[in-house]
Length: 110
Image (cartoon, helix red, strand yellow):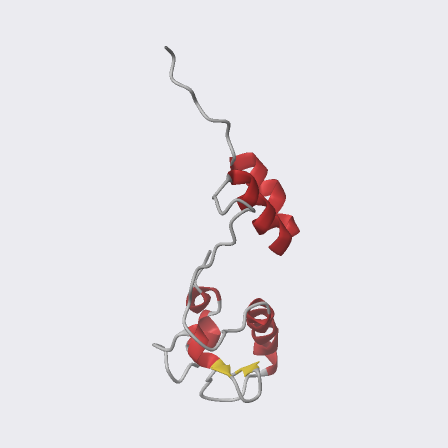
């Protein structure tokens, strides 16, 4: 995946803080993205602004730190099936790529 600074280099060049993290550009008060540009965008830059906002639209930071939680299966154990079921519940479109990466176990020859 290409970094946003490279994909939208013209907008990045307008940034007031080139070292800012993406999460720092989120405004919790207005629940919107503030790109932190040094000037208003021109008509020929509007398409790039719309494109970057479309990418960011699907992601909004949460208050608090990152954490990883696993909901095990009914027996409190980790299985491939419980992994698959949990992932596909969250995003059904992930099912097809996952199926292609799951391979049967290889048993050593006796």
